[in-house]
Length: 268
Image (cartoon, rainbow, N blue to C red; front, side, top):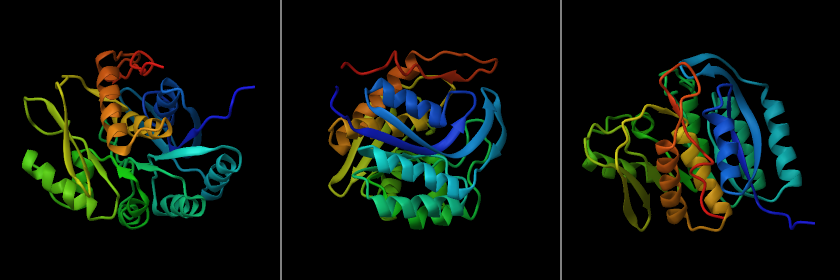
């Protein structure tokens, strides 16, 4: 019988199109040889052209899913994705405070690639107050960071300042993604913690993709389960997303690229 391995738990939304959310998270965990668990916080009807509908299951059922996972598995890291409203955020925060996982990776999902809004207005304060202080690392893109901070981020210097501001919200570290910056050079991501800021650069790919944020956060969680230090887990996760983007494909009728999770899988 095989030795029991660490599991990674994703608490996020389901993507019926298979490119983002729970589906991307579980593919990422599997590509990293980590057992994947899921607690579905929202259901979306979506495809490569947009989000058609969103349904939020009863909070009591979300609590039951989370509790069942912690009762039976050794959870090395928890990844948080789409949490649509303040009640859901409160339930998740309560569960995390009760179970105290070693690592919490928070992807503050607010808007879909298509532009569809995925977070209710009153939930933003709950996200800041309840979840960010629990996070080992938060992984916002620039539009998400702008919503969290309440101001625009215009350039590289603004990104560095924003990373410090995000740390002041209470997270232990920040991985700020620079793909939305209007720049013809490399994509620069920033990892920031109490010791300083590290830049991680990749060539810019002219691709409109779906699920990159979910995948990045899940890869960080998987790498933490594999024993990597937090800064290294983020750097290696960024490499993984870049490779999965380069190998991406278009399964739907839209122009959106879906990441190739297993083509980018790290060596075992």
